[in-house]
Picture (cartoon, rainbow, N blue to C red):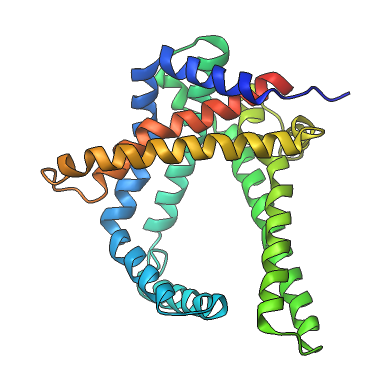
Length: 275
C-alpha cells in the first residue's frame, strides 16, 4: 500500500530546513543559478521576452497568438541559436546540467543527512551520465508524444474541425501529458539517494509518485505559488539595487538564489515522506 503524502508536513519541513541553513542554501542557490546571468548577458533575454509579449498582445485570438509565438520562435532560432557554428552553447548546457545535479546532491545531503558542504556539488562521471541518460529518455518521450499529437490533429483536420477546437484538444492532451510526467519528477533525488541505472531511477521515481499523484500535483501547485510570490517580491525589492550593478538579470539571479532551494527542498521533503 502506498504511503500517504501530507502536504502540510512537507511544506513545514521545507521551511524548517531552509531556515536552519539559510546562508548555505543561498550560496548553493547562487551557484546553481549562474545560468540566469549567462542567459541575460549572452542572448539579450529581456528584449526577446518583451518582443514575444508584444507579438502575442497584437493578436486578438488564441490561434492568432499561437501563430505569433511560432513565427517569433522560428526567427529567434535563426538569429540567436548558440549552437550554430560553434559548440559553446552545448558546452554551457552540459555545465549547467552538471551544476543542477550537484545542487540536488547538496540540498539532499543537507536535508537528510545533515552534511553541509559545497563539495557535494561534485558528481561522479557515472552519476552524471545516468542523469543525462534519464533526461534524454524523458525528452525522447516528450518528442514522441508531441509527434503523436501532431499526427492526431492532422487526422482530425480532415474532418474540417475549427482551429479553436483543435487547439483546445492539443492543449488538453498536453496538460494530461504534463501531469503524467510528474511521475518522473524525482529522478535526480532517486539518483543522489542511491546511485542506480537509468531505468531504475525512472522506475523508482514512478514508484514514489504512485498512489499520490493528485496530492503531489497539489503540493507542486502550492509551493510553486509560494515560490513565485517570493521570487516576485525579491525581484521588486532588488530592482533599484540592480540599477547600480551593470549586469543584466542581476535581480533575477539573486531572486533565484533565494528561491531555488525552496522548490528543491520541498521535493526532498515529499520524497522523504513517500520513500
